[in-house]
View 1 (cartoon, helix red, strand yellow):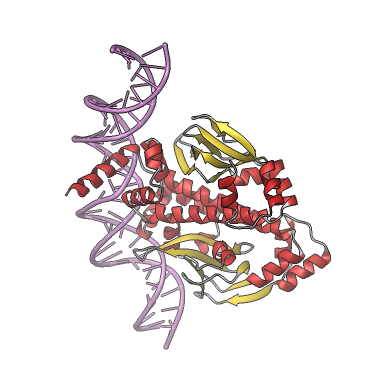
View 2 (cartoon, chains in turn purple, green, cyan, blue):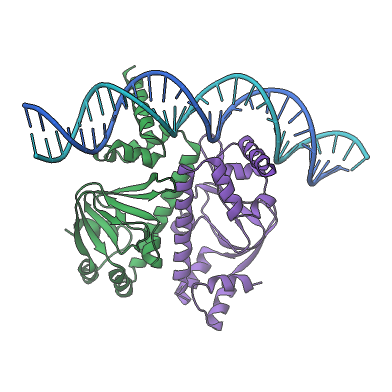
Length: 195
Length: 195
DNA sequence: CCCATCCATTGAACTAGATTAAGAAATATA
DNA sequence: TATATTTCTTAATCTAGTTCAATGGATGGG
């Protein structure tokens, strides 16, 4: 149960056996059925979750009532609204399970305790935030400077399993185009392949 | 000279006089003439700079040779490519002074020393990264779900002084539209006002 | 197994914004 | 002051992507 999370953390720091135990004892296993909304706009995010199995998405509801999917997360990824979690402030986002999902969760209290007893973890979480920042920056740049078709191709190349797991209109809301246009893109691409 | 930076840091942590001295002794004052490129794509970012006076922009050169402005920074803002700075990896960005600029700079070495001797600063920098993340997320969502006119209006409302200081085509490259279209937007808006 | 619901596709009409090219302002330089 | 360079504006044309509406598969629940 803890194998993957330990491997994942061990990419950044080396843990003694005791430290591993401190860590895993602070984790809480949570089962989240499909379609559960784990965090709603306006709520304070009470978890930082590592996905063992399943798939979730983080999205934002804009003033026209449109959903913009910020990211998907699958096995071995962390999900949370870190800003809300840390500053104890209301979130601007929703987090929803797209499949029955199993997570290992750190509560704010548990994370605090973890950082106090094994300060090395500061590094892990700092790196996670930074990677998150890099990936959002990257997406912003690409959203500004690439066509929807290019963004679609990059998305399926980078996350090949996600389009097989989630409805197409979620991908549209991630790419920032209408669901109909994703259809059009796919049609064009298969037409090209068959040439 | 250190008044503003101390005030800014003091929003997040409280410093004793000795701690203040440790901090300010580690800062290096740097004068950067207009048009200087302080960081180039492929270089490792060697600074985290607090702007005392002036204006810079961070931009990215996409594969078509187009510049996308990620952000502007003026007085009392920090500038850096944090990912590059911390991971000691080549940056994807350029950082350029748009005016003669005065900064207080932390080198990687100085920052390390600062965090070692005054660990409270961890908090400051964590919050800065998180705020940065939030603001990029916010921009991404708005880039996806708002029209150029709406984004332009939000930009001038949020950063009223910047359009007065930098050429309009930089704002175009920030908003993700052509410079001509910024003209069109402005024309439409002044036409409306005069009604 | 049937019905309901949810999801994807298609096409037609439309619009935001790009591109190109030219000229007009503004700013810097001598 | 004149001139060169940089920046901004305008207008015509073109295209990526939207919106709307209709149709057709899937999928799941009773």
